[in-house]
Length: 228
Image (tube, rainbow, N blue to C red; front, top):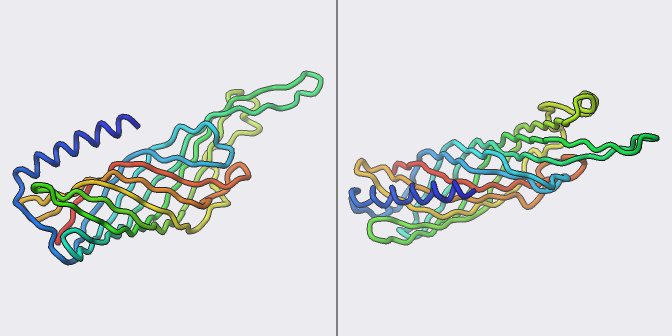
């Protein structure tokens, strides 16, 4: 996670330098459209996932916005997303007259979703840049999910492990939340470049794993551009 913060600082510095050569602009009223790409880390909470380390989070898709005023707008994105988590744990079984046996395992869960976040955006002009914060609901569609569990003992793994088994108890749709902060800069050709630090979560369970519901969270750095 520290690497994400360092990368964000470098990109925001680049955006500031870019803004010094960009034409002075105001965010005109009207509709904007373009594209967005995000990278970061996602995690799942619940479902007996007690020792998670997170998994690569990515998003790609269309970005839109409507600017009511230079300081107030609404954004709506249409994104394909990869989420999930990794987990390590152990299980203890009764060995009868031989006592008990403990087996360690690695667990991986991968989700492919379609996300439609709709957010209110508030902007503040500083020099030639607009710094912004935004937040709102996100309608998320869970397309497919896969679950892998691999034990350290080969014989026990042959009987109880599994690889990329499709999740059956996956919610088709759920309502989550998205929040973010970043900067908008207009390039000389009229395109509006943006950089965001984005967080998302699902208050309710999106799937049942290990007999219990799990919720999704993610944290990422997002970039893209818009045409007016």
